[in-house]
Length: 114
Image (cartoon, rainbow, N blue to C red; front, side):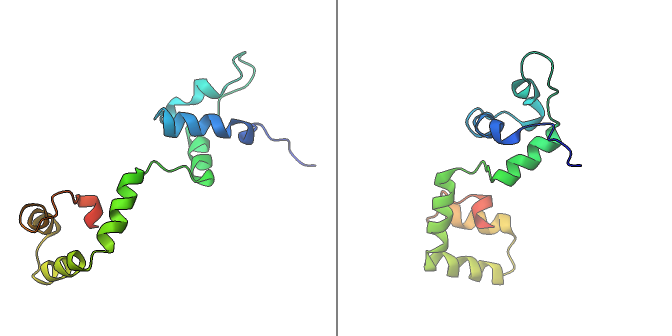
């Protein structure tokens, strides 16, 4: 015998997307939004909400940051500069400081350097 689903996730997909990406609500805080309002349906756990967020591919990545990462990777001068600083055995913090202050790349962040 097949067990019936306790929660219809597909019907809540757009709501979860809106809460997570547009309204920046954490999975732990979504429970009240996902009940039926009459108290007859129990809210799903934060763990299950996280599972479906990952399954559906909802990511909180800034589109501008994605584009800037690609731009920096395509800059051969920057790539060679980072390699040479790395070969000098400088720490990531020192490489970032050198790029930001001395080499003309003031907008590179720690995360983009990785």
